[in-house]
Image (cartoon, each protein chain N blue to C red):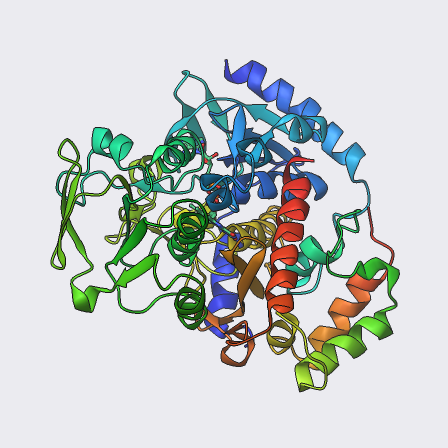
Length: 415
Length: 102
Ligand SMILES: Cc1cc2nc3c(=O)[nH]c(=O)nc-3n(C[C@H](O)[C@H](O)[C@H](O)COP(=O)(O)OP(=O)(O)OC[C@H]3O[C@@H](n4cnc5c(N)ncnc54)[C@H](O)[C@@H]3O)c2cc1C
């Protein structure tokens, strides 16, 4: 896993393209104040650069652990963070939406009419939920069958529906094909809902319709389902007709090859892509995500613009908050290096992601990613999941580690 | 508009520098930024992973080598340690074990 000639050359050509700064303090603009953007802003600030963060929302709603909110295990308030800590650290926080990027003039245009000049731009806008991918699943259908895949009002809607459902009701949850935000997240959601039904509404059941046959942490989820929820969770993979074909929100029906379902509560997680700002700026490829150089996270399409987090496709890393946080720090260092006329060193990135399989019981996936040729690859011996058949105390320890990570990472970003 | 934007951001640059005067040239070794989230928070969170700035670089390198070679068991660390060479582990241990730069 060493730097290849090509990646080193890539770094140098990026250097050559850097603007002459003439001694002025360089300014970096960051678009998006989530796991990628807020972390990048803090890291750039620590590196002594001038930072402006553009984020339309006054508060951030964090997704990790939001599946626990759905079933009443955590209050929504524990997911909500403000931007006061970033402002106090010296970051200029602009509450507006970026609507266009002019890569040659190095300016970002905001919905409010202002435009910001940058020496380098970091974009971390997360995902766009596709409302054109599943027939019948448009904006109003998404209110009837909430995805809750961006934490916020839909999380609370889905929590209310589950709480209000009568015992004996059917819950249907649908999962898209890869790639999408948080690969194990739907299975965590299924586990926690099944646990809730078993404890509180034991005559009810969850059907999990999947557009795939293989998924993240699969042996661990399957173990948990077989031992904990045999009566309350039915998994339907693609091979058995699990791919969602169509919904009719007014009739509250979902059609898959496996059958047509009319549940009391439905959550449809549709396919996703990089948000509109990425398409508008020409950062995306045909798959809808943003290809980047894995050393600097600079866009392969528009020079001077770096993309991190869920919107980026740097190679093998999963779309997780842990990845976004790590990519942000690597990218901030690379941006500082490039602005100071140094070639960024080839990084190593880490992802660790915990999923609850029951209240207070979690499993993990871990991986280290290095540069090979011109992409990020998982280092095979450094990738794995928690042991199958482990005792409860290990699952409890991993749940505590997951919570400790959430506390630490949100304090680092927003504290 | 752009003018006022420029002058305000110039003031902000100073604030950022005041917050973190000495770290600009201290490039962390590969992987260090990910370790720090869980191991440098050092807050009062119960059951959090160990606070590494209280350990010597030798202690940290020894633990990582043991995870890497399989003589020590754990949850995610046996995997993560195998992603780094002995030299990289040494650099991480020196970086994380020294008193935190902030
Ligand atoms: C249910 C669920 C559970 C999850 N659990 C975990 C977990 O346990 N561990 C884990 O690591 N990950 C988890 N994730 C994944 C994690 O939430 C995402 O991977 C992470 O949020 C990605 O960070 P980001 O910066 O790319 O995007 P976000 O965190 O979504 O941030 C994007 C920000 O950009 C802003 N924005 C968008 N467009 C614009 C624009 N044009 N101008 C300005 N700002 C804009 C948005 O308002 C938003 O604040 C989970 C996700 C879900 C849905």
